[in-house]
Length: 65
Image 1 (cartoon, rainbow, N blue to C red):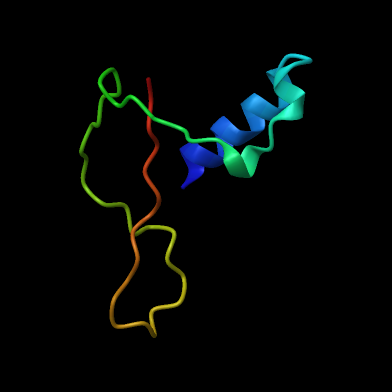
Image 2 (image 1 turned 90 degrees about the horizontal axis):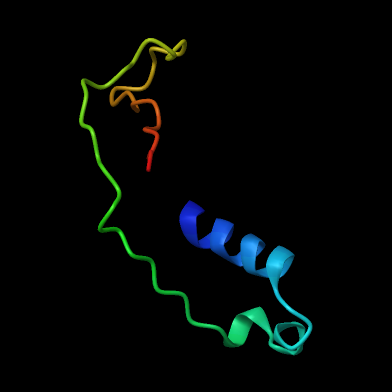
């Protein structure tokens, strides 16, 4: 999950001297999604160049805060 990877990187970058003793594998992250807005739009298949696949895959969506 991209958000969890970001949280690990931010903790690793910003942790205090005492927190540096902690191992990331021993931490538990809780992500609060309450203030995240999901905006649904039509899928965009314009980036597909190989039309041999019977099931085209849509372009990734962006999450904004």
